[in-house]
Image 1 (spheres, rainbow, N blue to C red):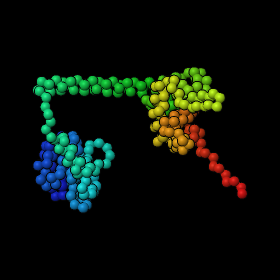
Image 2 (spheres, rainbow, N blue to C red):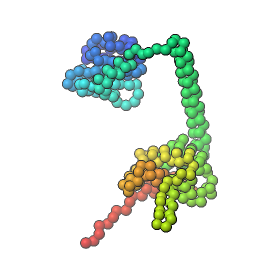
Image 3 (cartoon, rainbow, N blue to C red):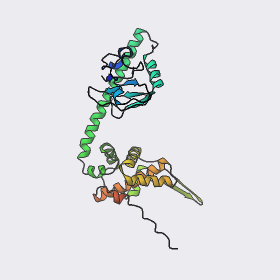
Image 4 (tube, one colour):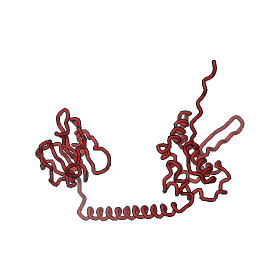
Amino acid sequence: MLEVAGGGGAPADGAGAGGVPDLGEVPELDPGVVALGRKAVVAVLGGDRVERDGQVGLSAGPGAPCPGAVSAGWAVLAGGGEGEPWPVPVPEAARLREAFRAGQMRQLPLVEQAMGRQTLALLGQLDAACAAADDLEHAVTQSFNLHPDAGIITSFPGLGILTGARVLAEIGDDRSRFQDAKGLKAYAGAAPVTRASGKTRSVTHRKVKNNRLNAAGYTWAFSALTASPGARAHYDRRKDTGDRHAAAQRNLFARLLGCLHHCLLTGQHYDEATAFPAPAKKLPQAA
């Protein structure tokens, strides 16, 4: 339960929605104090500016720091998760409170009981699916870490254990499977298809591909944008030349696949300077 204290008021220990104080149980605070969710409290603050001593403290226990000064006309939404408190407009907080506490139309008792049983059954299926996913993740992690190529694959930016395991499972560890990097790129759907006939020439993305490897490549390239400055610069250059997001990301995936193919063949780990060397500066022309 969160502790709510006003400037001079006592902590509120009343039991409202979700274990937080109700409106009528905090007389020292503004009537706009409302409860939202299991671990969230919205406190409406008055005045032009509320300094630290006059704030409504929102904390997970006694002695926790206040979230900071809040401008008038706004509410502070403090949850139990990570991150800073969220300012919420006062009218929106009041509207949500009325919507969550308003009376709702009811079904017949037997119908409500049947719907409750169905909901519990669905939740049980969801719990079982989550437990199975966690168990599968644990098994994949153990098996992947035992493979000799795991260190090379996870050295690449954007490739974690699960995504790396998917990439390894799809391309295999037979070095003779792909004659060169072009064959691997075509297999993954990263290489475009060029058709030319006479004066007509078209370049389109490849539709016949390994969809599982292609999906893993999309996640890989997207994650590499924030993990690798070189990958980000490569993506931005492709965008500047007119590529749309999907095309630029597909080109980045092809670049990373080529690097992976080379590293697996030579037994090297990923090197940022080698994969994305700095572009050569153009020398000024002599007058």
